[in-house]
Every structure is written in C-alpha cells, then in structure tokens.
Image (cartoon, rainbow, N blue to C red; front, top):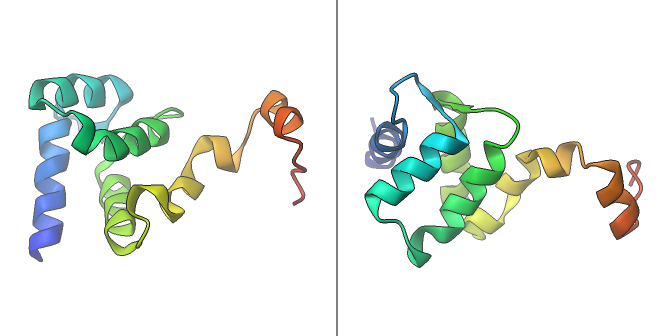
Length: 104
C-alpha cells in the first residue's frame, strides 16, 4: 500500500465518526471541528461538503476523489468538482440564473 493511499485511508478513518464506512456531511462537520480544521483545510472541506450533499461518501468513493485531487494540478479546485450534484444535476433555478443549457 502506498504512503498516499495509507494516508487517505487514515484521513477517512478520522472523519468517519460513527465508523459506518461512509462519510456524511454531519460527520464531516463534526470531525473537522474536533480536528481543528481552519483556513488551510478549507478547500478540502468545501469539496468534501459539496460531494456529501446528495448522500454520504463511501470509503471507496472518498479514496477515489482524494486520489483525483492529489493528481490534479488544480487540487480541490479541479476536475473532482465535476462529480458534484450541482454539476451533474443542477437545479432549474440555477440553470436559468446562469443562463446555461443542459445540452451544452
């Protein structure tokens, strides 16, 4: 197991407060507070929060997204954002507000 993979799994275990092998928004919030996350961790927190809006993240999804963030030169501001519910299924009011077509 690579050091990065081991570190990602350790991070998941720290965030998975109830040990159900899924990371919910509530757990993320609780764990981030208890770990003392601040500005340095804000970009990662924001992405994980966005990705947990529709449903908790499984361990495997978390590892996949974290690996994608690590490989992307833009980090948490990169392609991982394309997995968010707001990108894959934007609400009609948002589509109308920003003037995009679902076919674009």
